[in-house]
Structures are given as C-alpha cells and as structure tokens.
Length: 472
Image: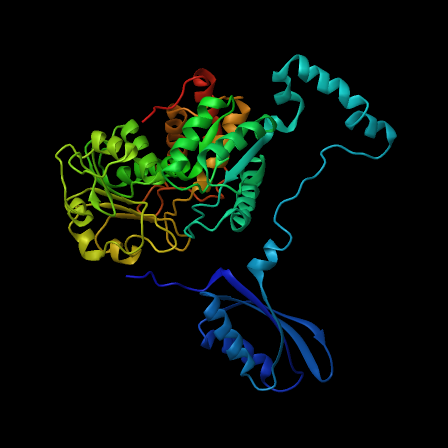
C-alpha cells in the first residue's frame, strides 16, 4: 500500500505570470492553486503597472506531474499569461551547493609571501621532517572526503558518479552546517573494487577521514575493510554505520517507552544489505539476542544453500531456532520490526500479528515497508525515514558528530565502541520529560545533537584509537 503524499517543498515551484491590474484574476490565483491540490507559500507582486501586474506565485506540489497540473490550473484563470516556471530545488542546485574559500587574507605582498611562496616552503619542510604536523598545519585536521562510485545513490540505484554528485555536495554541506567540517565530494568513475581502494588510498594524505557513501553491497564491505587496513585515518561507511547508530539510539528510546529490554525482545529485521548488516552488528553488540533477518528470499538461516560470506555471518549469529519461512512469519509475535529494505512489503494486518506494544521502524525511503498510518493502528511506536511523520530516523543525526569527534581526537580508525558510544549519546539527547511514542529521536536541528555525539566519540577514541572494528 503506497503512502499518501502531500505537497512538499521538495517540489516547490515559482510561477512568474502576468494578470490584468483590475478584475478578479489576482484573487483567483490562490484559489486556482488550492483547487489543484497545491499549497501557496508566497505570492509576490514584482512589477506593478496601470494595465498589468507581474506576480511570482510560489507553491508546493506532490511531484512533477502535480506541479504541471498546478501550472495548467493557473493558466486557466482568465487573463493570466504564464511567463516562466522555476523549480526551486533545481535553482538551489544551480552551479553547485558548496564552494572553497580562503581562511586567510591575501591583501598585499607580505600576506601572499607567507600563504604561498616563499614562506610556505618552511611549512612544507617542517611537515617533511615530521609528517604528523600535517594534521596541525594543513586542512587535513578538518577535512573529510565523501567518496562514492554512484552505484547505490539514495533510492535511485546505480545512476553513476555524475548523477551522484548533487547528493555528495549535499552531504558535504551537511558536514559544514552541523559540525563545521570541510568535506569534499569525490565521485569515482569506476565500480571496480581494486580501483576504488587504490584511488582512495593515494588521495588519502589530503584528508583527515574518509566517508564512503552510496556504494552498493556487497562491494562496500570489501572496500571499507581494505581501506581500514591500508589507511591511518578513519574510514566510515555512512550507509552502514550511520544508519546503525541512529537505529540503535531510536530503538533504545522506543524500548524505554514500551518498557522492554533489548536483550529480551524478539526482533525481525528486513534487509541483509549494507545497512541491514551494520544495524544487525550494532544491535548484537548492544545486547540483542533474538533476531531473525530476512532478505527477498525469506529468513536467513544456516540451511540455505545460497549464502555468501556476509549472509553466512548473519546465519551464524542470528535465528538460533532455524526459522526458514518468510518475513510475515518472522514478524508474527515479534516485539520489534526494523526495515531497511523495500517499499510495501508488509501491511497493517501483518503488524497486528506482532506482540503487544510493538515497535515498528519502517525505514525504506520514500515509501516505507509498511504504511506508517496502518502501522500506527497496531504498534505502540512507529518510526520512518520520512520527514512528514514523527520519529524520522535520519543519518544526519549521526555522521557529523561522529566525524567531529574522530577529527578532534585525531583517531586513526572507527571502532565498534565508538559507534556504541555515539548511539548512547544520541539517545540521551531526548530527556525523560520529552520521551514519548512520537519523540524517540531529537530533531536534526536540535542544538545538542552533534556536540553530544562528538563528545562521546572523542572520549571513546581517546583510549581506543588503535582498536579495529570486529571483522566478519
């Protein structure tokens, strides 16, 4: 069952049009948009004359087809002449969303000679003598590479490196906004594991950390594992570990709401890819003991003959009773459902079979595994990855603070202890007074989120900077 969509700023358009100065056309504009199902967010008269008015009407639509329907409705108002229709999302991306700025003034010859030649040579020689000084004297101390091959971009699939660039730019902008980290998109025109690993290895000296992004499973596992072995800076795959941190934090608070313990609840997890595997690993590390993982073929268990290395690990560490049925059977009597898989694979009747005071995390985006409205009829706590429902589980809650802590600690790796510390700190941002079925995670704009996560990671990294993550 598809989730009903409402007008969203993601499909915001500005229609520049001309109307007669007299008559009813102006008053009919808002009515025309609303009758088409849109929402007027601004109406500005940009030019006024005795005969005509030029007006910019800004409105939100559900999708591109709906936006066109709104334009058609406006054009149908008597006397209206459409001049231009602008998609505000495309305008935001025009020319890119990030830029490089100098942090030092270059106003005269003296400043130029210190920032560049000949003065810079002294700094270069100091680093040559002591390479660790690069973290102190260059951008390395506060710079992250956001690396992708474009093979698993958002929910869009394998769209390639050029099409991935707007997403990576957005990621870099989030790093700056929420943690004051300078991040740069690195979009690689290869999907060969050896080439990806080698490329990142040879550009790594210029960065203090590597954020792997939107690389499809199972290649992402090998890329991350090999880079962790090769590099002396932390490597973090946000689709895996960022998601896992946010899920554990949200589940910690959801179980507080319903009065259940992580070590005692039965969990059904849909999705055995990058995100699902990382979520599973962190849940197990946090104390979960009863988990059944399902992929598109059903439950993962030792008796399946199609298990690769990753699925074999899942089979060895979950589903102790050897359940071999489908997802619906795994959900029955479960206390928790976590979905990081595909849209519309469950319905409200399936949620009704879960245990009392069930927790449902339907995180497929933009269409969840089960309609949030249907899930709410039977579950005590429901979370999604969407911004138009309560309890949005969004990786922005995790990765800026994680990297802020890693860079501040000059950590060389990301350890499982750091991930657990980040999840605990994120959960703690929600106070006991605030906690409730509709508030288990803070807003991404909560002022304490990034600082709390960073502090937890920094403290954890202080004594564990050389300890690697658990291998499969």
